[in-house]
Amino acid sequence: GRSGHGGVVNGAAAGLGARSSASASAAKAKECSDRLFSELYCGDISVQDLVDKMRTFSQAQSGAEPLVYAHLVQSLLAKQDHFAMLPDCELDVTAIFLGQLLRFDLIPASKLKDAVRCVISALRQDKNSSLFRFGRLAVQQFEPRLQEF
Image (cartoon, rainbow, N blue to C red; front, side, top):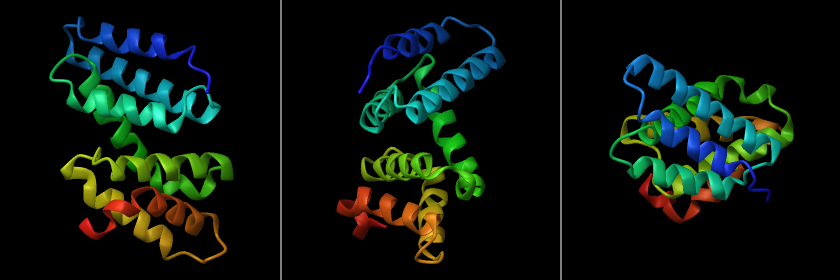
């Protein structure tokens, strides 16, 4: 994959910690999160690279990274009602990303039920639908942990 934009995102995320205003930090975290999603869907960053960033961001104790991480997860789960409207390619990338987050335990406990419910709901759709494919792709990603759910 192309990795030319990773430094820009990391630099933007690192610079967030210097902001004194919580609302400015939250807005900047949203901007960085949205940029990461855009890069994911454009192919500028791979799912694995974004999962690696999420792992790093989730372990950060301060600064912008925890805010970006929280916003990415919240935004992903908030969009689930619109998944059916995504083009197949973006839906597949979303399924793989969500499944990888579940596989590597990168969904906060407070959001875990929503994430699993999203996948189960997709698996209840018509077997020929794009949402069913989404659910199947997501499950394939976290299959090693399936018994835990």
